[in-house]
Image 1 (cartoon, rainbow, N blue to C red):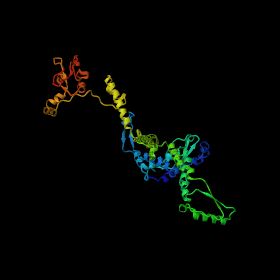
Image 2 (spheres, one colour):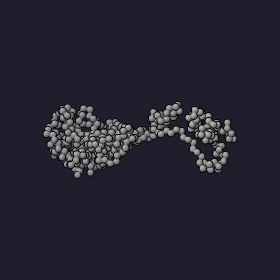
Image 3 (cartoon, helix red, strand yellow):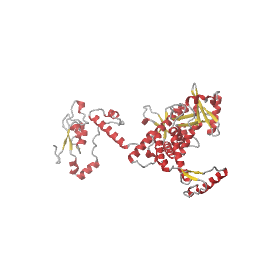
Image 4 (cartoon, rainbow, N blue to C red):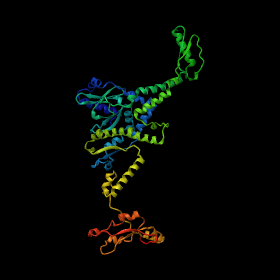
Length: 492
């Protein structure tokens, strides 16, 4: 029976405590902090998505693009070529990936992990196993700020510590966790994401938005100072503040005339124009897009965007943002999850349907160039079958040049109806020397009519020598040729 995440973590802690007498918590001491520094504010990185609109748009669009990709399970081919693989439609690993747990579909699971990866550079999966058999039964996405690797001075890693919402720490074995990350340059136990480099800029964007909001809440006027000649008692100070707020605070009281009995208003000369909030927010958007390498057109912007750079942006988005994350997930599935199924998963691999849009013009130009090269090589005398693979084209069975189709009753009927018009259109004719040395194929094709030179030269390359001649078997050269007929029907 499936266990919930809490039950899985609790049981994992019990198993770990039994198998490993040394507590995990004691190993996560100053060893990690001393070598690789303190916390990097992972919770703040996760919260940033809900506070800055540009960041939300980038992370949301990327995560949904990854979640919409189709996954399949294949059995590898001996040739090593992807096109030779055989799809596997029934396997426990495929069932798990299609439905990671009772509360997450595959799409929701992938999207949640992609959000974590985009925001923190880390994606964590916890494996829940069946109580009676040691096989993965459920996969759960876990927030990166709740997971902590436990280093080991001898074996590099002892396991992981999960901190629950109530602060309870639960020890997890290495085999119960799948960790996907963008490697951190100074901390081999953690990942790094663009938001870590953007926190200061994200704060600036958020604070500028809040300043604009408070500008309107506070009478839509810049702040100022009320100067009084003498000190005020606490009661006088409170009375002045309450009266001022009552008369002037809020948008409805904007621009009302202020009457001060024993004070003077000193205006602070900071306006929205002085603060340049429009420019500040534009710069913030550009910095965020730059950190993620996100195409401007993919955020829905229409200024400076045309069809050409919009299509180029779509290709760049798929190739450089979506595909690298999918490759990391595929690597985790094939090298961390599938081995847990033992011999039943040998020779299997997960793969995704490439989300990068095809460049139709490029593909067409490439195919034309390869076809032209193949035709030139074959005309020069190279083997047709080997030529295709040499220029990068798929193998096509080659059975020689096609034989001219024999006349049918339908074609004879049409010819009879059209009369000489059809015969006149057949401008080329096969001519064979008929004697005792003439082979049967040449004798039978004698007088055959062809519509044009290309059709005639298919059977008689260069104008002479029938391709199906069998005289060479008896030491005789073919003496057949094709000639162009005059409009009167006489041979030239």
